[in-house]
Length: 92
Image (cartoon, rainbow, N blue to C red):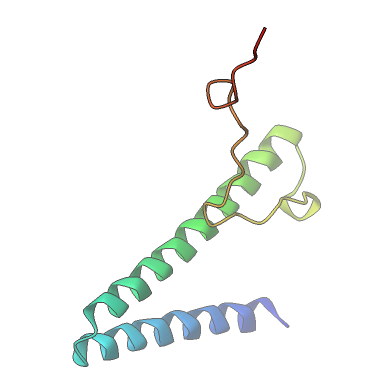
């Protein structure tokens, strides 16, 4: 798939999401419309973070962006290690 086709597909997906949100407003489904809006904003933010990570990494390692393999951004799902305060106290 060419870059131009991929861009067009992304633009079409965004337009469809906006249409969906507007239909939800029209139907009085305001909570669903807010969820749709939040989803669109999260997707944009994840994309911007991934792009910035690639820029920073390429500058740090003096490589082109295509040569760097970065992980996909998460949707806030991060495993938090157990802290010593939360761990059971040791008995003597």
